[in-house]
Image (cartoon, rainbow, N blue to C red; front, side, top):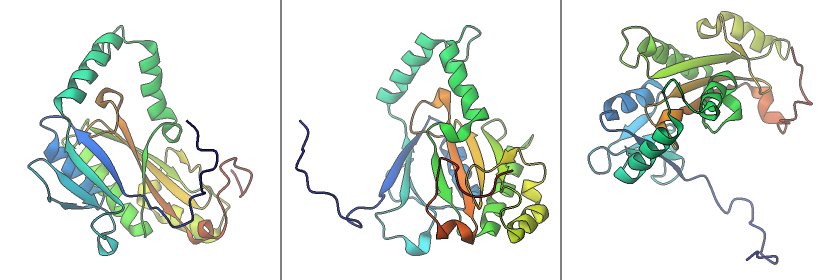
Length: 228
């Protein structure tokens, strides 16, 4: 039934509370390490295998703006196993629709479901990406479990931003340019934890926006701002 006379929600009457994500058996230590590398505070305030992920610890009110990391239960794991079997996920005869989805997670990470984390300083983003790059390198503790794609800010939007991009080691040889004006985007593709199917992976987007971004409403039709 549609409530046609529903009272509009007033601004400020709700906030983003939490995101629940899960990991497979045996992946808890590495899932923790992933978020620690991203600069999060992990609070073990639940049963064994459960942790609360907080990025803005000084502003944490114990309720809002958090992620909850916990083990995937048998119902989810059994359903995923059935889906993987039906679609032949990971096999030579994998359903081409699944292959296309996985490929898109790599080629167009912004176009599929993902979680976005915005850093309050460019230096914090650099530290997180540098740490994750080390951990995912050959021999690293997260080798093969996460892939990083780096999109630098587009040139010509602001001279200061151009200077920061030129000096930043993490954006040398970047994979492309940001889809957002006055910002950078780093996409982390992983199978360590997910809100969906482990076999299809999870994308975590790491963002930083320079000051001009806070002065205008974003236009995702890409009609505003200088483009390369």
